[in-house]
Image (cartoon, rainbow, N blue to C red; front, side, top):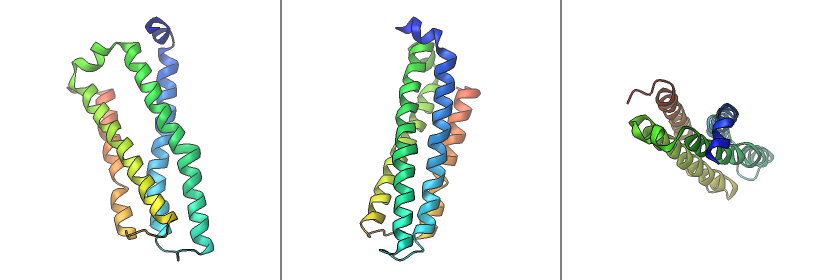
Amino acid sequence: MIEFLQDWYLWLKALHIIFFTTWMAGLFYLPRLFVYHTRVKTGSDQDKLFQLMERKLLRIIMAPSSILVWVFGVALIFAIGWEVFSDGLWGWIKLGAVSLLTLYHHILVRYWKAFGAGKNKHDEKFFRKINEVPSILLIIIVIMVVVRPF
């Protein structure tokens, strides 16, 4: 099995990067939709449109992308060997940052459900601020993978 993964290493890496990119796009865009969603009246046509846009973004792009990021990421760990990944601190930091992105994703789902139930308690400033979280984690992840400083 590991030999198979090593033979397909570049494909696994490409797919991991592709799905990480699409997932990140959603993680950047969904809070931005929430910013605009806070400005509309609950139950209005605009509210329903935002709910539809958010649902499609979550279910068609973000959820599948996040799952595939993890699938291809784990496959890459097996392809390069657990020792290479776990010997340096870089691998653990990257894994931690991706885990935090996953947690952030699930928090966004909770906010989306609150909008759907007409129970959003946050203003647009809040969503503008939390929109910075994926940027910080992206920087950490890219530095850990490319530079491997630890």
